[in-house]
Length: 183
Image 1 (cartoon, helix red, strand yellow):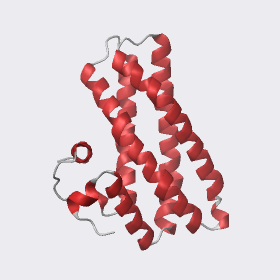
Image 2: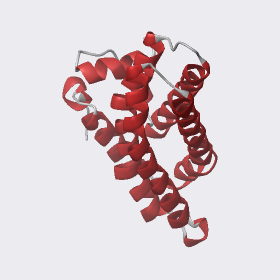
Image 3: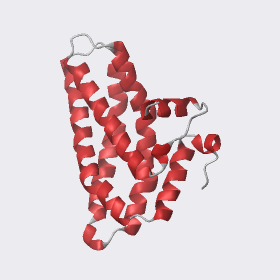
Image 4: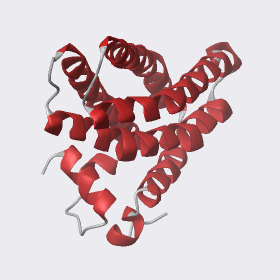
């Protein structure tokens, strides 16, 4: 069972097998980034298509409605505040995180329009541009997080931070009750 399947099952609140991806929440965030890159490629394929594939559109919509909000919350409620507490002044983390939080606000503003475009499946030239811009901005954001934020988090965060983040991530997805995860 792949991570994507686990996330979809989690959304449906079904009984799950072991979830080794949650062992280190930073690895789980990195896997979410990989999934988001895959979604960006799908968005580009829809934008390039004269007749978008309905299943592809539905897959993107499902990701944008369910997986992306949980991921953004993981970062905004856990990762970013923990980094602000743990990083040294020379890390200049506040400036980096302020930029990422601004990106999150723009994504939150743009995502409903992208979902509406994909749900309608009649995408004109302006809609195609909106889709490719959305995917490009998401990739730029992911590059910054993967190159700067995650390595810094691996260096600065403590085991207690990671344990708290893991528990919060499980709770956010309703998996804490299913797995009896220790907090």
